Image 1: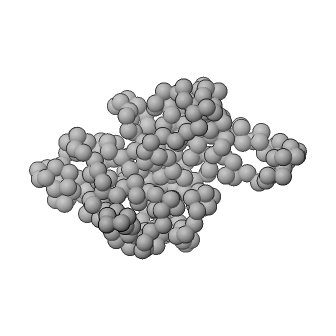
Image 2: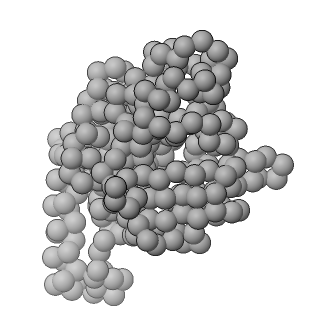
Amino acid sequence: MGAPLLEASGVSKRFGGVQALADVNFSIAPGAIYGLIGPNGAGKTTLFNVLTGIYAPDTGTIKLGSSSLIGLKPHTITQRGVARTFQNIRLFGNLTALENVMIGRHTRTRAGVLGAVLRTRVQRAEEAAIETRAFELLSYVGIGERANALARHLAYGDQRRLEIARALATEPKLLALDEPAAGMNPTETHDLKRLFERIRADGVTLLLIEHDMRLVMGLCDRVLVLDFGRPIAEGTPREVQRDPAVIEAYLGGGPVHPARVSEAPA
């Protein structure tokens, strides 16, 4: 078995008297789709924020490959190869879909500020390449025909896809998705599942927080379950689904079925 792409060990985070994360350990293999689930308040988004540099952990280590991510700013972590989307969609509503993706792509530009001011030949060529790649990514996620629409005018599901396209524009090794299927109907969720499978097939590793257990159980290779900031189970979807601690956390007893879990508060 090869080295993990991402490895977290002993990660803890406290906010005042609240222990948001406590001794979280997990690793994600290259090319995997890894799920992060748990009831409301379990610490899922806090863990995402620690992984992506929004919060610094109180204890623990986080490595991408052999390099530590601890102490790095979010934009540096993005440049290292970790991109994310957010539970509450964060787009530039008064910019077009194309412009939103171009902003994500600028993390990989090289012309610099002086080139942008002087409009050098190198800068003009780079900007044209950014625009071309941004349109390719919009088409890749299925909204190429909406490239010139303002982001705020897009349908909710298309806004979710736009966030994914913008994240992909940073050329991530790991794409972290915070509730990507939230608010989607079953058809939209099925289409999203196919998109994630395509992203994985194209060489990007995925980490997702998700409340739709049908999606998690049908998509993820492994799943980590948090409850009150602590890991209570980790394994394949089948193993996690049958774990007594997971059953208790979600439903207070009784067998866990993906449909039942998706109806529980999470």
